[in-house]
Length: 123
Image (cartoon, rainbow, N blue to C red; front, side, top):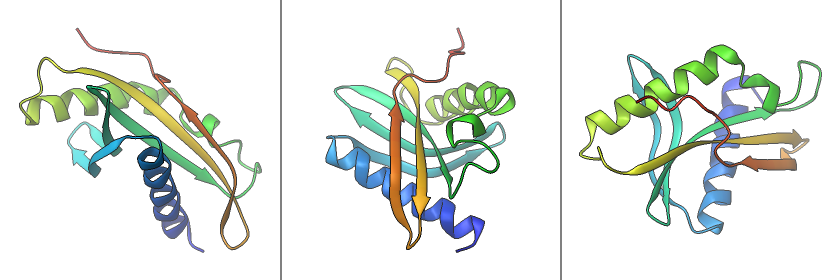
């Protein structure tokens, strides 16, 4: 499995996880000049921007560790751009991280969903 196909597989797993917990998926791989949002979902009136990180092993760190300082700074910028591109100025929102460790097959060895994981909401 290539890095790109592993990422796509992880995003599909994350979509299934979110749907099974009552989230409604609004967008996937939304791109703008500020960056990319892997998934945009809604739950209980809250818009949730989701960064998905998938790893096969811990050789290069955990999936959670892959959301570094640079990415954490760019996610609120991309989220704000999404809000500006859609008529959603007054909606509550947050940024979650879903970290997936994949085994052979691939199969999910571990999935962690970190709600409100990235600070940096812009005024």
